[in-house]
Length: 391
Image (cartoon, rainbow, N blue to C red):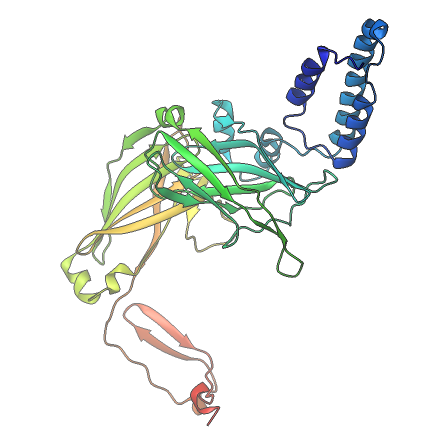
C-alpha cells in the first residue's frame, strides 16, 4: 500500500511559487520531476524519515533548478534602466516610473511548441506603454529574433471601454528582451488599459515558420499614473516678419514624458501666398536651452550631434490658417528655468517664379534668385521616359 505524504501538496505549492517567474528548460524540469517521483513511500515506518528526505530533495532540486536557470535569466527593467541612464540621452521618464513604483509584474507565461513567452514587467502612463517581453526556447535560452511583430502577430492596447487606442512595436535598444513600446500623441484618458497579445507565428521570412498559440492579456491600472499629471499654462507669442504667429499654450507633465503644445497662425497676406492646402505644409525648428545657453533638446535642427528626446509629435487644423501642434518629450526640467528658442520655420508658398535653362549648356552651376532664396543648379541630364521603354 502506497502512502501519500500530506507534505506533497505543500511541497508542490512551494516549488510552484518559487518557479513562477522562472523559465525552466525541459531537461531540467524532467530531471526534477523524475527525482521527486522516485521518492514514493512503500513503508509506513519510514514516514518520518521520508518526510525529511522529501523536503531535502525538494530543496536540492529547487536550488539545482536555480543554478541551471541562473545563467539563462535576463536583466530586469531596473538593470536596463541603469544601463540606459548611463548613456548620453537617458530615459528619465522610465526612471521616474520606476521610482514611483509604477512598474507592474503581470506574471505572463505562455508555453506552446517548445517556446515560452514571458512578460514580467510593464509600465504605463498617459504618455506611453512599455513592456519587457521575453521568448525562451525549449532549452531555456532567450531568442531575440524569433518573434516578428506585424500583421501575423499583434499587441494591442485597449482603454476601459474596450476601444483600441494603440498597438505596440519593438524599439530594439537591448538584446536582453523585446523592448515593446507605444507612444500617444494625445495623452490617454482612461482609468485602465488592457494589453492583448495575438501571437500565432514564430520565425522570420527566411526560415520555416512555427505555428502555435502564445496569446495573452493583462490589465494595467492607470489611476495612480493619472494622479501624477500636472498642467502648466504658458504665456508667450511671436509673429515672424512673413506673417506667422506662434503662441505657446501649455506643458503637461506626466510620469514618462512632457507634452509641449503651441499654435501657429498665418495672417491674410501669408495665406494669400499659400493658397489652397499649401499653408498646411509647415515645418518648425526649435530647441530648449538653459538660461546659460546649454542645449536641452532640439526639434528639426539644422545641425549634427544635437540632443534629442522627442517621442512623438502631432498636429491638427483648428481654423483657417491655424494649426495646433503638440510634441511629447521624455524629459524637460522641473526645477530649473529654461527657454524656448525658435530656430527656423517653413511654409509652402506659390510666388509665380519660373526658371529656364538648356541642359546641354549647363557646363557650370547656374544660380537663380527667388524672393530671398538662392537656388543653385549644379547639373542636369535627360533620360528616356519609363513609359516609352516598352514601346
